[in-house]
Image (cartoon, rainbow, N blue to C red; front, side):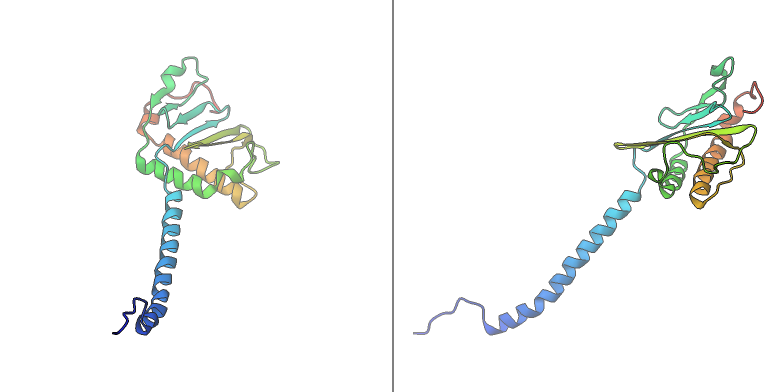
Length: 186
């Protein structure tokens, strides 16, 4: 009587040795693919992304994307006349998100002057706050030059981002419907 062998035959062992390469390739490809997908997701705009932006000679103009409140002159005798609602589109929010993401808010101190030593009259004050998930960061520029010039690339990127947000707000039909300023140097 012949004994049955329940083990792996020589041919099967040979095939198994060649099988490990494709299996390793597939596993490594999956790790790389999931890494790329994970990376792309971190760059996508979070659903709860919001920003607060104030600007002007006395930080008297502001927009809060969370509450959709736009104020052209909060120091006016009747600030309610200078207040309206503005819902920026998802595409506009995405553009702002991209600019802020490229800027890297964490690379800036809480109080920042993009062009130290440069002065202008009137001066400009800016506050930019970004919030999403558990993250919140504010950058304040108090009485900086109104020239939108910076000493380095980091400052230029910050000022260009702020200028783009400012132009988005000031070019909106909601902004244009608000009355003219009560005072000069707004």
